[in-house]
Length: 384
Length: 146
Image (tube, rainbow over all chains, first blue to last red; front, side, top):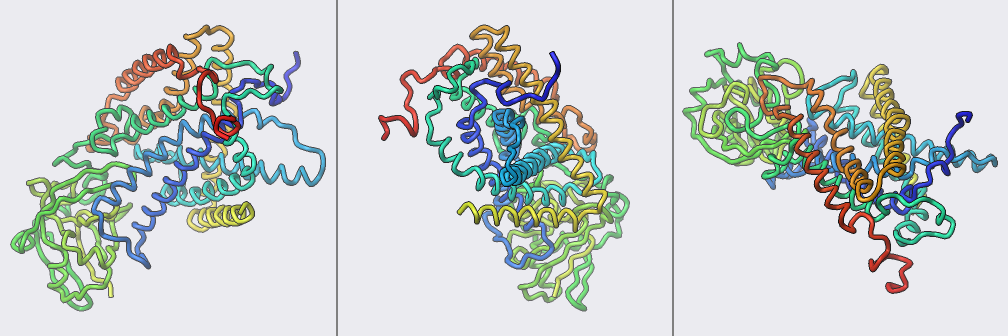
C-alpha cells in the first residue's frame, strides 16, 4: 500500500463530531476569557502609571483574580486537547477549487492556525513559567501578554466565522445519529461520555496542577509547582542571594531614604521601629498563582510620607537595593499610598522580617501584585 | 454581529502583533514564532497521531469495560501529565526556595494515576460514559422540549 495524505474519512469515530467540539469549545472560550481578563488586570496592576487606579479593596482581589488566571489556564489544557482532537480530521479536508472559496478557506484556516498556535503558546509558556524555568530568549511577560491578544482576537474571528455552525451544533441532540453517519463505528464511550470525561479532566488538571492557589486544596495539588509554607510561613519568590542584595541588606549602616521634592529624610531600621507600629493581615499574591496571608508589622506608609510633607494624591515610587531583574522598582498609585493598611513592613508573622522576605524593610499594600511589593527598600520617593 | 466580531478580533490580532514587534527584538519575536509553530507541529504531527493510534489499539483489541476504562484513563490522565512536564523537568528548582518545586512529583503522579485508574474503572462500569440515548433528556431537536 502506498502511503498517502490522510482524508477526513480515515478517522471515522463518531466522537470526531461538531456537537462535541462546540460544547467543549464553549467552556474553552470561558476559560480563555477568564485567563485573558485576569491577565489584563495583572498587567494593568503592574503598570508604572495607572490613568484610572485600581481599587484598594477587597484586599484579596489580586489574590483571587490571579488564582483564577492560573486555574482557568490549567483547566484549559484538557479542554484544548479534546477540542483539537475532535476537529482533527478537518485538517485533512481538501481545499475547494473555485477561487473565491479558496481565498475564504485560506483566510479561515489561517485564523485557525493563528488561534491554535497562540493558544498552545499561552498554555505552554504559562505552565513552564510557574516553575521559574525560562528555556527561551524572549521576555515571558511581554510575549505572553502580546500573544494573549493574538489568541483573543483569533478566537473572536473563529467564533464569528463558525457562529451558524456553533448554533446548529449546540441545538442538536448529542445522542442522535444522522443516517449518513450510521456506518461510522461507535467508540467505547459515547459523545456524552467523552464530554463528561473532559469536564472531569479539566477539574483534575486544575486541582492537581494549580490547586495550591486555593486554601485547602494544597494537599490535593500533587503536581503543583508550588506548595504552601516557606520561611516565616510565606513563600519566597526571589532570595536575597539571587537578587544580589545580601551585603547591602545586612549592612548595619542601612538607611531608607524618603524623598518628596527637596525634603529628604533618612531612617535606619531602629528609627523605623521607634515610630508607631501597626499590624495588618494582608495576602501576598503572585501572578504565578501562589498566595499566602501574612501578619505584617511595621510603620504605616502614610505616617512616613507625612514626615516629608506629602499631601496625598501623588503616586509613590519604591526603589529596592536590588539592581537588576523584576521587582527592583515599583510605583504605588496614590490611593494605595494613603491607605491605612499599606505598611513599610519590618516584621512578618511575629518575627523580624527575614532576609529573603525583604529585611531590613519592605512594602506591603492591599490588593497589589506580589512583584510590586518591593523588598529590601532603599528609597521611597513621592512623585509630584 | 459576525462582522463586528471579525473587525474587533482582527484589531486584537493586529495589536498583539504590534506588541510583539515593538516590545521584543526581532530575534525574540522569531523565538515566539518558533515556540508557537513548534507547539502546533508537536501537537498535530506527534501528539494527536499517538492518541489516535492508542484509540485504534483500544478499539481493535479492547473489550468493554476495559476499553472504556482505557479511554477514561487516557482523557483524565493524559492532559494533566502533559501539563506537569515542567515540574517533572524541574529546572527552575532552587534549594534556597523550598516552596518552589518542593514536592515529590513522581509519588504525586503515581497516587494520581492510581486514583484515576480506579475512578476510570468505576465510571466504565456505570452508564455514565456510554449510556446511549436510553431514557436521557436531550436538547434541541427533542420533541418533548419543543
